[in-house]
Length: 65
View 1: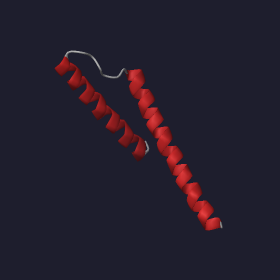
View 2: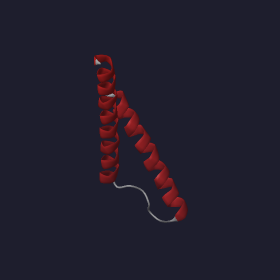
View 3: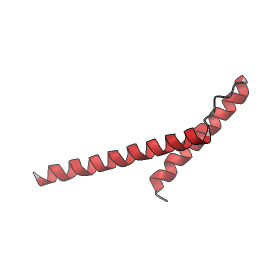
View 4: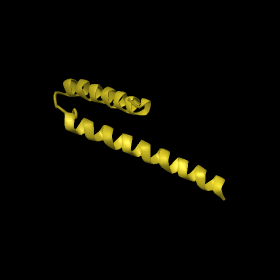
């Protein structure tokens, strides 16, 4: 698995755990569903890939001209 994807998954798992702990403290469930968690991970990874592609293209364009 891609290291960046692993990092993103770990961040969102920690976020989910914090939301569950907060939910228990306040007595209202504000945690994310598994579907929401998967969506947030997917969106974060897609943004990361897009940023890497843009960065690579920018470098290529600067070196080409």
